[in-house]
Image (cartoon, rainbow, N blue to C red; front, side, top):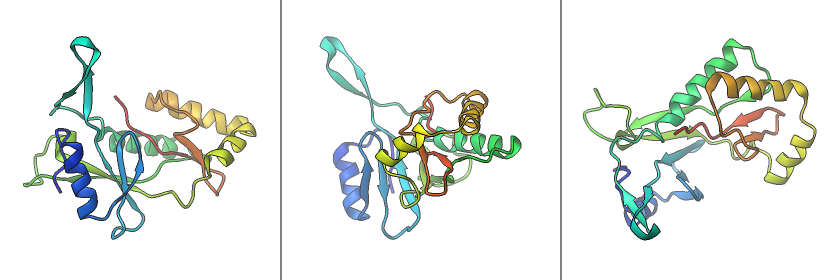
Length: 178
């Protein structure tokens, strides 16, 4: 499976068709793969910059770590949850899968890995139900989110990225950092 930030949208669509994947996110490339139940696949985004006249121009960045950071920060958050004995916050399991051979001595760059993540779609509340749960959030739950933000240096703790589950826990689903 070829995955590089330099991959065109047409190449990404071809991969989706080949592996019967269902796109579930619009901004990044997040897919459900039917023959890998319980796992979602996250491909790094194509980077765009403004150029002369304000036109968007594709920027090929071989040094990007944005997608790889999902796993790095997931591990950091998981350690904080364990070390601080947090009871209300969870983070889905995420894995790096190498896309190049040999699999040894690969630098932690998006061009070398895709991210496989635990699929929580059957355990997370809908947007409306999540908003309703936030209206009744407890001081203890807010304090745990504050601890995660402070200790993991997370800036994107929005309602859309911190979603209540059916079990009452708050799941931090977007651990990607710049």
